[in-house]
Image (cartoon, rainbow, N blue to C red; front, side, top):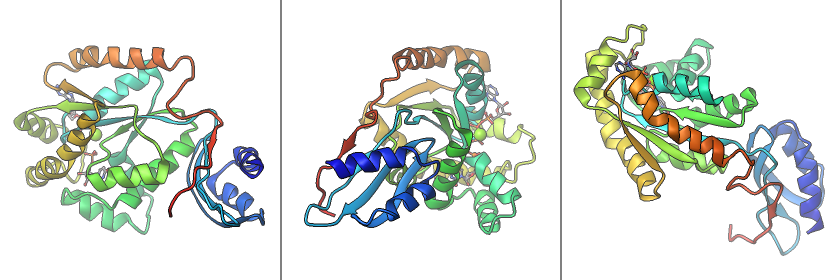
Length: 271
Ligand SMILES: Nc1ncnc2c1ncn2[C@@H]1O[C@H](COP(=O)(O)OP(=O)(O)OP(=O)(O)O)[C@@H](O)[C@H]1O
Ligand SMILES: O=c1ccn([C@@H]2O[C@H](COP(=O)(O)O)[C@@H](O)[C@H]2O)c(=O)[nH]1
Ligand SMILES: [Mg+2]
């Protein structure tokens, strides 16, 4: 037990995941300090093997684990528009996965061409690329509550995010919008996006139905989805969703969370 407590103290003082790994590597009594699975703000969830026969998983979380709400809906359903209003009123950090991917293209990244081609074709970018961008943005923001917009887009996205972060979303907000309305909005958006054209829109709608709707169904089976009709005025939709965030703010004003505060779990695992 003492080794877990020492780890907890040391890791909570680490400023980044790489520093946390270096701290672990300096401890000879920890064998194979593999990797820190997440470091978002000061939240660490990691797996290490302790030398000896009682190898186990050590899970450490610190005081302010990130809280995440996934904002899902088809292309043009109004996710970004509504997120902006929630940010203004409730102080969430808004992370649009699509915006992060577009910024990655602009940055001259090695993945830029691949991402650009996939967006142009309405395809889903490999999960590791998107999740790393999301994690970095979470870390950089120093925020504690996040609206993650347009992600996860398929079941693999969801699983990779959970594996790499250990974060379970608080709830999912799903904007339900008829296809013809989504198409009308996208074609009228006029922001110079390479995917805002009729041909790519058809592909995006198909990808949404084939891959993203099943993710919504998965979370529905867990009772985590709030479905909102996304037609009507921008203000009316905001008025509909506002109580959800008011309740969320009230529920979390005490700082309590499903993630334990400063607790550790050394229960043995089979892997
Ligand atoms: N309720 C609404 N009524 C009419 N137009 C809307 C409404 N909500 C958003 N729009 C407009 O529709 C367009 C698409 O909205 P937005 O960018 O918020 O959608 P999105 O879900 O983020 O789309 P994408 O997935 O393509 O990023 C924008 O031009 C926006 O101003
Ligand atoms: O998690 C994601 C998010 C987005 N993409 C790709 O980007 C475009 C545009 O996304 P928007 O949310 O509409 O801004 C999307 O069609 C995908 O090609 C992704 O791969 N993964
Ligand atoms: Mg958007």
